[in-house]
Amino acid sequence: MRIANYLRPDCVALRQRADSLQGAVQQLVALLDGAKVLTDTAVFAADVRARLELGGVCVGNGLAIPHAKSTAVEKLQLAALTLDPPLPCDTPDSQPLEMLFLIAAPAEANDLHVQVLAELATLFLDTDFCASLRQSETPEAFCRAIARREAQDDPAAPPPTPTNEPGYRLLGVTACPTGIAHTYLAAEALQQAAQTRGLTIKVETNGAGGVGNELTEDEIQAADCIIVAVDRSISLARFVGKRLVYTSAGEAVRNADALLEKAVSGKASIYRGGHAFRTNDWKELGREYYGHLMSGISHMLPFVVAGGVMLALSLLLQHLGGPANWSTMMTNVGNAALSMMYPILSAFIAYSIADRPGLMPGLMGGYLAQTGMTTATKLSWIPSGFWGGLIAGFAAGLVVRLLNRLFRRIPQDLDHIKTGLLVPLLSLLFVGWLMLMVINPPLGRFNRWMSLALAKLQGGSRLVLGAVLGALMATDYGGPINKAAYVTGTLAVTNSQYDLMAAVMAGGMIPPLGLALACLLFPTRFTKAERRTVPQNLVMGASFVTEGALPFALRDPLRVVPSCMAGSALAGFLTVLFGCGCPAPHGGLFLLAVIGNPLGFLAALAAGSLLTTLLVGMLKKPVKS
Image (cartoon, rainbow, N blue to C red):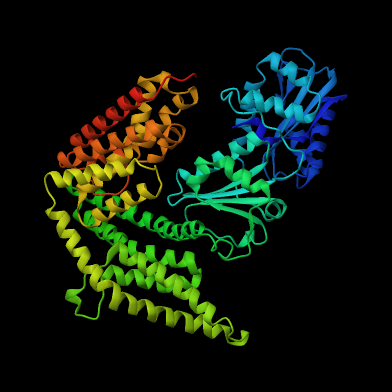
């Protein structure tokens, strides 16, 4: 957390007079009111006075930090005031007050104001810095001094130049298929790049736990441009008429500054609704359809993960001699969840393309892919699986969009016939014909051949496949290649090829584990900020979250990526060699009790992590902390 992110020049007043602590605090409240960050000034002022009566706002060294959580505050904001002459007051060290910071926090902000309070208290332990800050000539210089102080860990970064404009000049939205890592890494990258440029930005995150830091209608209307960095489809209707920069979450992590440059240049396209503003660019068109695919996968994954873990727990219960009815129940529910993966995949691809009208034909197309239904007898049906569901989803979404365009001239009075009968009926008819007559027969036969080929694949060939899957998991850390390898592993689980899932999981765990170990064994190769991530990466690696290695790979891709791929390939090779099997598609070390040959799995992790560590230690050069 950086104080400079929450302090604007228009909320700073220098060399003011005050007759009392209450009078100084009232000036701070007036600054926030003038900056239009309060919904009810009187309510907030009363909340601040109530907190003042409790005492403890004077922290010594001439500094006071009054603070309050209030329903009259929409978002966290700071105000600062320097006093000339100093104000005699009851302080811990008997020094008069020379500077005050007011923390205004929303009522639902939990302990956010406490975090800011701790940051401020730590920042102003340096008496020399406090003295120099009080000598600032302008509010802009005051804010720049704080930003420089907080950026000392990164001396190469130029100091930010805060803006006087109220509100947020730029807005951002981030999302990734799993909503775990890239969503928040992209948001952090945009915020840091904006801070460096002296721009104000608010970033909404669409994570696994829901929407965080949601953009308001007033903020959207006031913003110059919105950066949409997503790897799955999200609703863009609220941005109609605004300049929009549309990109992937990974691109935001890698090139946040370039995105900001495009956003402030005035060259970003104005969003007119739908996807029309992007279809003249093949690269953007490809990104759009990749987003539709990731929308389907992101909705499918919870079914795969929950179903797979439940099957694994049922196996564990059987091994422990638990109640038979419970293990049977868990097995049946787990299998039912896995049987929903293709209908959900297809449904939400179609929903992403055509909105609500696409959901029904997409769901039916996925169901037909799951059953493998054809015009032949039921005994000959073979599921067309993932590829069948994927084709059904795109076909359903596109045909619904086409039908809506063909029927757009139907009179308004008959619109209910179009939406309630014609589009659902004709789209289902087309998807049914496509799946039963065109897709399921050949794809079903191909899936049967592939399943038999994998089952027969033994010896060196299967070891190579394990190594390749492991290496692919360490290629782009949550990107398309990583996701393709992961989907291959989950499909292997549904076909009881548990050793391949074990190779995928081990390959995904190696990068964060190996880099964390490298930070411990070769500390001179990493910056202080990188070394601080060791505990975080150990936890992420143990939990099978590959994205913990992404910041390292972005800073030094030519050394880090090959080192991680080599370690992950070795781990994948060894898991297959040792006969390890993972019956669930997620969980990392938390699934150790149900992994086949757990000691072999741990040995593979240790060998792969150590190889990555040694390669990184040899290839990277010492850096200055």
